[in-house]
Length: 176
Image (tube, rainbow, N blue to C red; front, side, top):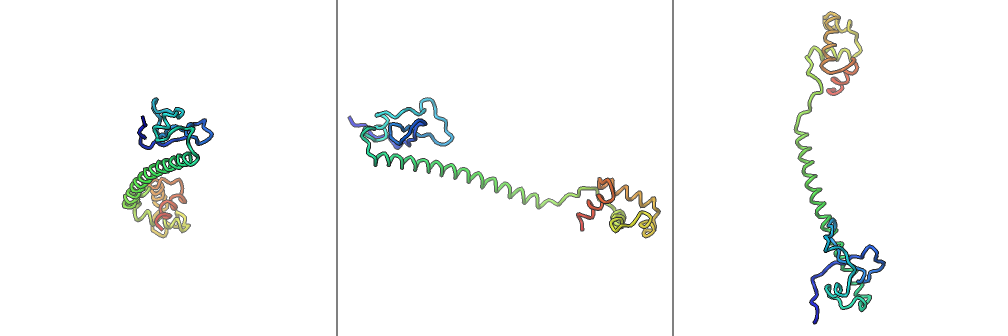
């Protein structure tokens, strides 16, 4: 009785295999697939060789062994291609998400990191940036030195600054 050849089964070397002889080959498992108990690699027997359309493992020619290696290489290449296609689709999906996020972020107006200042506070801050003292600013704007100090304290609270230089950097550094 002649055995009917089964559909193509990829063969991979067993971990202890040292050559590509079919007797040392076992059915391959797809990447990431854990073999089930009944699928675990067993040494190829004459029956296994018959199931893939071969006669006897000992009667295989070098050309047949070479063809088995080529078939295995093709199977490995197809599995790698499938993995690359899956990864490519995932990367395209993530790129689309990033583009949408970038468009949403660009459409949002930038938030001011401090409370808005009054026109008078901005004017005082610009004069401080020019290096004027509180007294000189008061003379120029017809204010008392105490009023200039009050405005300066309000500027520092609104901008969450510890000193004049920090307030200037936070307000005038972003607008000019």
